[in-house]
Image (cartoon, rainbow, N blue to C red; front, top):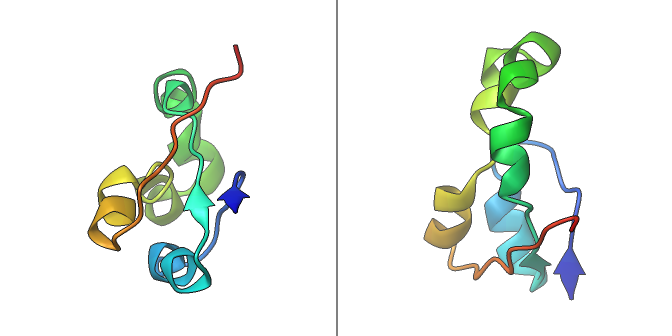
Length: 68
């Protein structure tokens, strides 16, 4: 089952894997949203905004998407 617009605690990758979900991040937003992440989310949450490495480390296979 695909999962989009997911945010939350630092262990969200493990929770997605345990639930059998497929994350569907939009990597283009990592570029377009970068300047506003830290001011709006704070340093801790901004650092976890696009966790592609942690998704892969949890054994997930993200299905990349775009809004185009």
